[in-house]
Image (cartoon, rainbow, N blue to C red; front, side, top):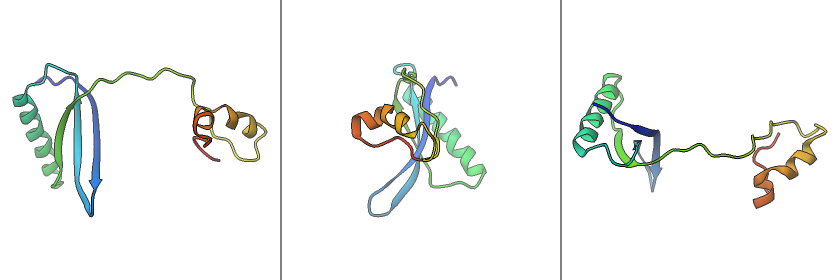
Length: 104
């Protein structure tokens, strides 16, 4: 079974109470059939059950992954570091939202 996956994410949703854990399998558009998705889902659930993990849902979506291009993130330094005031003003989040990405 060939599945050309682009991403694998687990999550859960909370309404009034937490829902089940959901495994999202993102595949490139086109080549994955419904039958293949069903068979792979059964294999994933079987693997989880072999480790006594139950109540998980497997969902599929078409997705395309690409690496974002941009400057590297600044390393985190303490508040007493000489570069804090200079580097804080240069972060993209600070420039856009006025909030730094990370604090010391």
